[in-house]
Length: 313
Image (cartoon, rainbow, N blue to C red; front, side, top):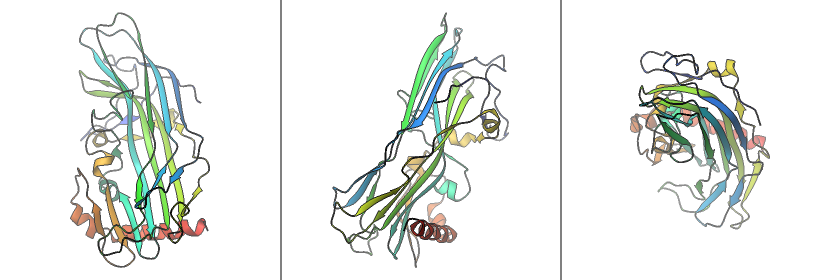
C-alpha cells in the first residue's frame, strides 16, 4: 500500500467557468486537512459464478477497497466540513453476447453520446458522496482540538444476466454465449466546505474491474459458464501530483443523475433496430433519439464482442 502525503488537489471544474480549486492550505478560507493514512486495493480473489437460477447467470467480482484517515485542525464556530469519498465512472463496456443473434449492452447514454465525460457513482442519498454511512463524515465547529476521522468505501459488481435473449420476439431458451465487462473509475478523497459549498480534493485514485465469462448454453445448468479471466485485477493507482493536476472532475459529475439511475440496457441485434429493455430512472438524454442515432455504437460493440471472443478461444 502507498503512504500518502498532503499538498495538492485534483482539479474540479466550475460550471460555466472551468476554473480549478486551490490546493489544501493555499487559500486563507480553506481548512488545512492532512492525510494521516491512505490505503487502496482490490481483493486478491477471482470473480465467482453462480448458476443456481434457471433464469439468470449471476457473478460476483472482488471488492475494491479504500480507507483514509484524515486530521482536521480546530474549527471555528460556524465552520462545517464534510470529508469523504466521491466516485465517478469514466468508462463502461458491459456486453452480453447471444450467439449470432446479437448482444445486450448496459450503457450510460450521457457518456456514449458524448454529452458527459463521466458520471456520478454516488448512492443518491447524499450527493456527491459515494455513500452516506462510512464513506463520509461531517464535522462542525467549534472544535478546540484537532479531529481525526477515518472514511471507508468499497465497491464490486454482482449483477444478473438472463440466459435467454430478453426481447419479446425471442423464445425464453438459453442462448447466452459470452459476457464481458470492464469499467474504469476515479475515486476522490475530498473535503467540502458546507458554508461556501466549495470542494478540495486531497487525493485521487484510478481503478478498474474487468471480467470475461464463456458460456455454453447447450450444457446443463451448473456446467455452462467458465471464467476466462483476468486471474488478477489491475492494481489501483494513487495519482501523483502531476497526474492528478491533469484531471478535471466536471461539476455535473457531482450531481444527479448517478450511474445506477442513468444506465440503460439495450438489445443490439446483428440485424435490425436496437430495442430498449430497461429504461433509465433519471436521464438528461432523449432516449428514443439516442437509440436511433447509435448505429455506430452497435457496430463497435459487435466488433468488440468478436475480437474478445477470438482472443479467449
